[in-house]
Length: 168
Image 1: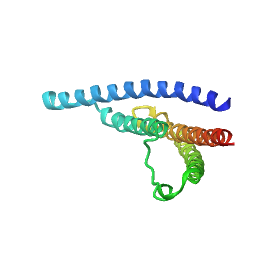
Image 2: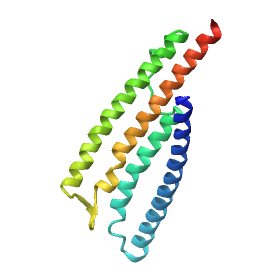
Image 3: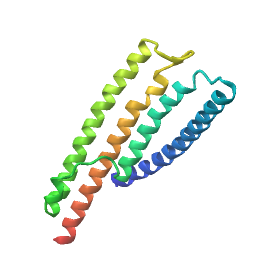
Image 4: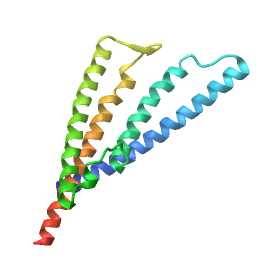
């Protein structure tokens, strides 16, 4: 039951991430195009555009990593897993995914500390725009990946339990 609720939440989050990703990529393409045109035709550019584009790349990276985790397309080193038989392979994946979720939570915590320090020291990226507005994606992105690794682990556990019931 809980897994169904988590999967539904995951699907809704995926839709939001996809929309945000499309918007950010559209803004990036338009802004980069404007920069090229303005620099080549008028020998001028938008002063803050390059900084904004760099910060939007950070958002695209974290949202993309979150979506890749959901689809199982994240970076994965599974040399040992290939040689394990049946259920041991599933156990290995559960342990690996839960450990990865823990690491993501720790990175989210470190990211949160970083963002709060940036807020405390009133770091600006351009004009009067606080840097932490753009850096907040760091802890959010790691938490989203952790959430997805937990869901993947729960799906493996559910499959393992369901398989046992069918076998006995």
